[in-house]
Structures are given as C-alpha cells and as structure tokens.
Length: 110
Ligand code: AMP
Ligand code: ZN
Image (cartoon, rainbow, N blue to C red; front, top):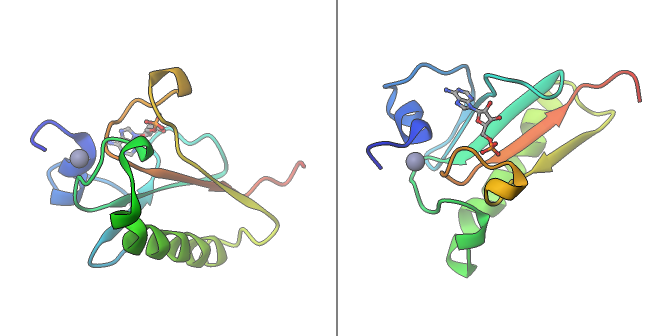
C-alpha cells in the first residue's frame, strides 16, 4: 500500500529501529512507547488493515509471529512479564491500518 507508514518502514523508506526480521515478519520499536520495552510486530506484506480481517489463511504467519514475540521477549529480558495487544478500529485506539501487534513489557513497579 503506497500510503501506509508500516509498508514504508518495511520498504526502508521510513527509518525504524529494527528488533528482528524474518522472511514474512518485521519487528521494530514503537516510536512512542507505552512501556519500558514496546516492540511492534507486523507481517511485511499488507495482508490486512486490522485483526478484524484475519482468517484461517493467516494461521501460518500468525503462529510465526507469536513465536517471534516469545523470542524477542526473552532477548529483551522480559521474563517477569509481557503482553501482546492488537487494537482494532479507531474506538480501540488503532491509528495505523496495517495489522500489527504490540509487545510490551519491562515494568519493574508491578
Ligand atoms: P495503533 O494505535 O494500535 O494503531 O498502533 C500504532 C503504533 O504505531 C503507535 O503506538 C505508534 O506510536 C506507532 N508508530 C507510528 N508511526 C511509527 C513509526 N514511524 N515508527 C515506529 N512506530 C510508529
Ligand atoms: Zn501497510
């Protein structure tokens, strides 16, 4: 998608702080973190605007994404606790319409 900020990040047209990458997935640091560690995981291809558009055909990359999230959580030292969030629609706070998952952790005060 030509006007999608995350497609531009994958294409290298917008700089990002890359955390991990596979053939299908890209992970990078959120520019406005809501946790001490806040990483976004996305499919490189613009396969859906949000999780509302996902179905059985997406099982492969979704499973890979969950595994990558667990690997990143270990690498980032988040063993004490982390969460995965995906916002669907403006009412839930979605601002970028390229399906993505927030990996957050690193709190020391809870
Ligand atoms: P959401 O609100 O669920 O759509 O999440 C979009 C996230 O993308 C927000 O947390 C933003 O801070 C983040 N974001 C937007 N633009 C960039 C960017 N260029 N690099 C890194 N993160 C970004
Ligand atoms: Zn996109």
